[in-house]
Image 1 (spheres, rainbow, N blue to C red):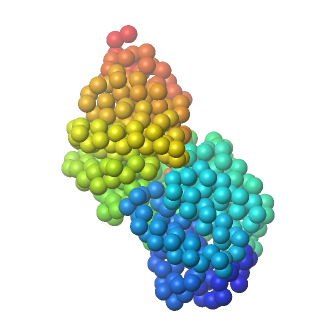
Image 2 (image 1 turned 60 degrees about the vertical axis):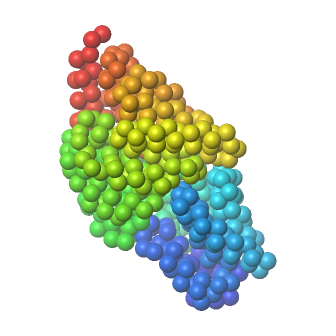
Image 3 (image 1 turned 135 degrees about the vertical axis):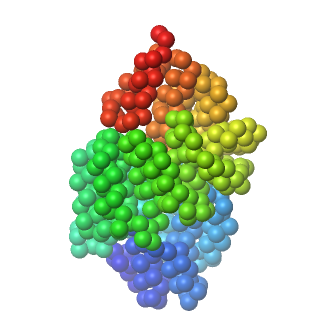
Length: 440
Ligand SMILES: [Fe+2]
């Protein structure tokens, strides 16, 4: 059997392979229920190795230890079937297993290698891009897709999704024109392609094009919102643009309707929740009772320690609420992680700990200390992954801390940095006024 892109699949049942093709298409677009689609196929074909591997990889890459039982169950089932699997499938298993065991760097390279050997293996390309994303490997987000993109053409199913991944890669590499053109092309091919729509939203965010960004979110949401697995994150981008537009209340309305309304059931949603509430709260706005719900969900993950990026976002919620014991406990989790040897150990050491200490100090009103930690974190912040737009919360908080600490020189410097990127944004203009009012 062959899959939709022509890669050999060891299983004999056409309906199982078709179900996987459909699930991969859903995952490419970040929509629908790819897990349910494959789980149903596995009920009829429990010996479908690539189905189990797909689920194991999907759960592992969700960056949430809450899903670990699902990951282990799927990988255990897959392992028992590897004898009949082909080499490509065994390599997928090995990559997913490495990620599940904490070797995110090794898993990403393993998927990247599969894509070299099988350039039409869209699942390998996508998981490798997720791996580069979660490690903040800005140039690899572009280059790994470039390695295979020329081998694609519109006759191959999923071609538009490859353009969308390339768009995001160019965006994180700072090549905004190319990113926008490719992202728009991909969305024109498939309006449900949330990843491509997301790449264009990032371009708008990075270039400070607020009205164009709001229009883009508004115009494309009919494609990526219904059944959208990434809708909460695209709305998060829309909320950031609302803040830049001087409408924090509209940003909170987006939070209520599109981010928190889904129940904040996974770590990646909690990251966006913290990141949005923190930005608004740090500007001095009241965010009401929203923090408590976020902190409660993070508290369930206090000891997980699998993602420094997540842990830092948990600290934001605890710090904002004055939950000092929880903030300290989360920092202790980061310290334990930093002493390890997996990918997260490096993330925790280079970026996680100084960031977490910065947010915790900010919550305690120790602004000079917060500034110092955040300045330490910023040069190596890419190490804990995410996008430039997500990591901008460090610069955002450092500037606010500098102003509150009355540190005119640091505030001047940091506000100059923001003016270069986002002169028109309302928070920038507000920070500039407050900075100029500080004593020299
Ligand atoms: Fe994003």
